[in-house]
Every structure is written in structure tokens, then in C-alpha cells.
Image (cartoon, rainbow, N blue to C red; front, side):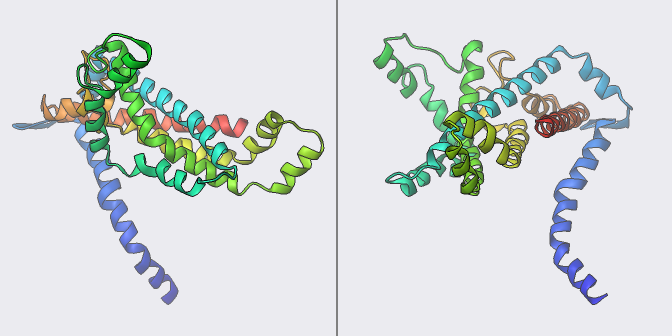
Length: 283
């Protein structure tokens, strides 16, 4: 009995945090999503907010942009992160220093990195256009004001900032691979590709799932980099569900529809997570 009380005492701070900052906001968002919640209005409307969203063409554009952002950003981060992890799994001179530089993008606040890229992408004074013109002679590109380039510009910010996270998680998994298994496979005549595809990748499967799940959830929540650089534009080119939900709440003052969109995002993210887990289990 005493042991149970001690356990409850130590768990209380974590449980309180979970209830105050996670469970209560989620339940309240559900509650608001069924109401017409404005400054001078607060009444129950049932599923009306959801029906309005499903009839809104901008909602579908935002959903498509969100899926594009999540799939492309996380996909590139995984491929680059895996390549970097395999490189850093080898011994080479200056490896410790290189790992410190690798971690730098992660410790920069997203707002700061977004403002930095805003300057880098500037069509007249930005470094990106200067380097491209110097190397390839291309004319100036308005990276953030052209719909065709704006999507890739915001994705590149996420890739730059969070590829090191994926690389470090995968590197941690590679460090604990049983070296005897790899040596035995080499002696049996396995080449580098067979070693990677048949042994390394299956053995780090759980680490891969953890890295992808973390990034998938975080990519869904991406807001600062998109809002600061493009504000969801040009037009609707980079308007994700997060940006649209923010605009619904704080520009159009439609808190009910904004909450309904947040709940839909929760379902979409959960659906993608389940697909990801199922794919890796079947593999």
C-alpha cells in the first residue's frame, strides 16, 4: 500500500502535465468543434462545422498541401538521414567535430530558421539566387512567391532542420548492430548491398519506425516555417491544415470550424501512423 502511494506521488507531476496540457485541450477542442463559437455567439450546432469544412474547396487544397508537405519532407529526411547515419557509422578523422556541426540545425528555434531562410530566398539580395546564378547562370527566381517553387522552398526548410534528427536516431540504431552477424555475412560472401538490405535494414527496423513516427507527427504540426515565409501563399500553394486552422480561428474568428479542422487533422495523422506501422510490420 505504501509502495503504491509512493508510486502515485512520483507519477503525479507527469499525470498532471498530461491532463492539463494534452487531455484537457483535446477534449475542449472536441467540445468547441460541435459549437458555433464566436465572440458574441456560443451555441450547439452539431456536425455543422464539419459539414461546412467538407463543402469548402480550400479545405481540400489545404489537406492535399499537408499530405504533400508531410510525405515529401519526411521521405527526403529519411533518405538523407539514412545516408548520413551510414557515413557516420564509419570511423574517420574529425568525426566528433562533424557530429557537433550536424546537430546545429536542430538546436536553432524554428522561428529563427524560418527568418533566416526568408532572407536566403530573397529574390534580389538572397544568397540562394546569388549562388545559383554564379554556378549555373540562371536568372533570379522568386522562390516564395511562385506557386511552383514555394512548396519546395518550405519543404527544404523542414529538411534542413530535421534531417540531423533522423540521422542521429538511425546512427544510434546502427551503433548497436551485432558485429558478429555482419562479419559472418561478409565471410559467406555477401556484398555491401546485400549486407544493408538483408541484415542492416531489418535489424534497425524498430529504430526506423520510431524516427519516422516522430517526424511524421512533427511535420503535421509544422507552422512557424510556413507562416513566416509564405503565410500559406502564394494563393493557396502552401496553405496546410495548420495554417488554415489558424486563419479560421484568429482572422475569420470561426473557432468552431477551426476546432473541427484540428480534430480532422488528428484523425488524418492517426491514420497515417497506423499505415506506417502496418507497412513496417508486414515488411
